[in-house]
Image (cartoon, rainbow over all chains, first blue to last red; front, side, top):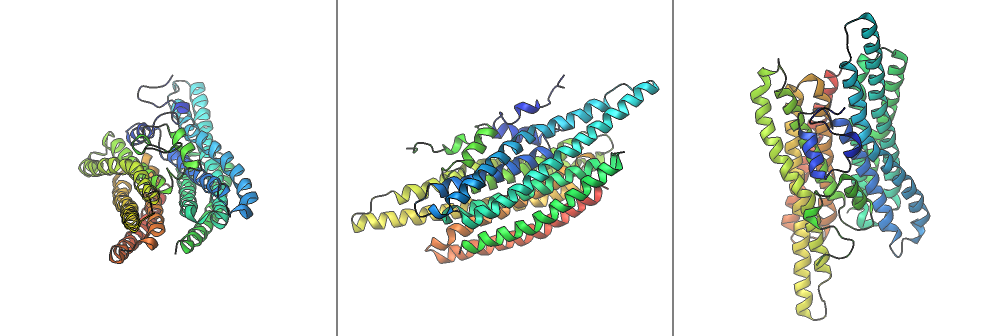
Length: 218
Length: 218
């Protein structure tokens, strides 16, 4: 059952941009920063696709066509994955909330509830981790769009990398907020180590792509 | 008249999130990076509002209530302004495109067309500059949300500052792409100087707020 005022996860990307922003701003816990992270990543992927689509339509850009087609295939796959994650983050959060509402009278109740909370926390860690992975892939694609894209839309490759990196860093915060309560420490440590690696890649690559694009804007 | 395949500016935030992403990814020039910048800023403002709204509803957070109410009033004002800018960026780009399509047979035609292009370029510089200003204000509000917000939603203050800063940097790229063709150099130089100032503030403040939030996540 969906509590009153809550957002049904799957419906969130079918709602208007304005309604999504209203829901984000409300005192309801979802959609929150995790969904914003996924949407930023999806915008980054969409802008990579735009650079490819525009470049593929331009006379004089034939030399970049094979590369742009390869990038476009990847960016559209990532856009679909990140768009789905806007809702997946809500579902993950809801699973923790549902677990906290389980009965806690008997010892058996308590054990079931504790296990459900841990399972929810694991899901609410894996989901942003997956958003971070997908965003890192978008960062890498934005470099190829920035290197080979048509000059008139090159600023969009720059916006793409910024959106993807913000999705990555935002997802990292959502990993950090859930990890302390995880009892399964090897999983928690592994998640933190992977986030650090993705952030290190994202930080260096984003600044390199931003500088590349900035340099082309005169 | 709206060319086939184009997006009607005012309708863009009434369309679904999914449709907005489809339009962003398409080979049509709008919506592009400028609209994505405004939407990032609007998401940042919405997340500041969320932190305020959640904190205002929590027992034990009464001490922060006056500050949260003051921040919320500002963040909601900025959210409305940035949401409107998603469409304003499209309208500004359309005004340049319309100017380029003006007749250029006679010398009189050419003079009218050149003036219209310059007027369009000025608008397409002022609009992202205004997005950058609004995003810088959201960055400043995110610090107050991060300092005084309820701990369980503090990661959302971190996502807010990242979204706002990405909106600012993305808008800067849209200033850079239009400025070289501007003939009115004092306006161009002034715009560039203001962008640099906003970026310097945004870079330092964003990292400070991210570190503050990260420190509270354990």
